[in-house]
Length: 331
Image (cartoon, rainbow, N blue to C red; front, side):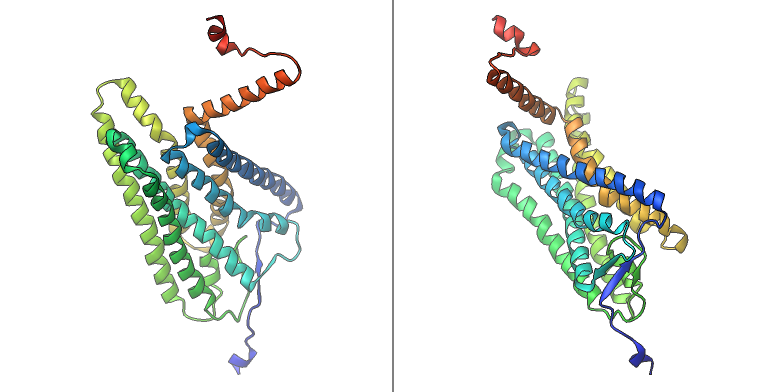
């Protein structure tokens, strides 16, 4: 009799972020700004790397893919979340939920291994500078980018198939603002021990393997930097890694808190805030970190703006001589 009363879930309802109108308005404005900044910053970074020959190096090849991943991961959750802020019914179809979880998981896992590839690139640049161009060939760079996508695809497909292969026949309210695996497993009408074990193994493997690659690379980098005799040389070597270290610290620190933090009801609000940070804020921060702390990116941006000023001046019949080029003109 109990089995006959069960109904198959065809859609899920999100608990959302807040039900207070004032908070909803403030959240919508802030999150819309963050999402637009994410799109503008990352797409701008991709365009700049593509059009500036000085940035056609392995480091910026990886950075362009990191920006692409940030755009995709943010776009897998942000548009739906923004639409749901003022909605009375925050619903998503069964297949739509599966697609959202797959997309978001794919790009988050890819980002972890992309950061590992970038750490390996920095290791080669600092520890083996004479062999850098030989080892980091175009073929190797493509392999170091394709590899993260393939690993992430296998992991995410496994989680998605196992999760949505479970029977969902009871409550359908997801206490979150997007389809994440842990809240979905709590709604299943079957034993989820196998799913949790697979999640622990695969997510742990992704975190541990990518983390070990990053740690090993930076231990070797630190040893190499300490061997440099001059303070200027050490500072220059470290400056090439500072942006990457900042991006790693923010992502891994946030993922640690969201997935290691106790899953008690009292921490649900905190988990939502942290989830909001790594789904929305981190993709916006990455292009800022790499542009503000990277001289090559700043010089490329500056040259593009200067070229626009010169072209604009010529179109108006006025020749603009930029201040820092006065010496060249005088000579």
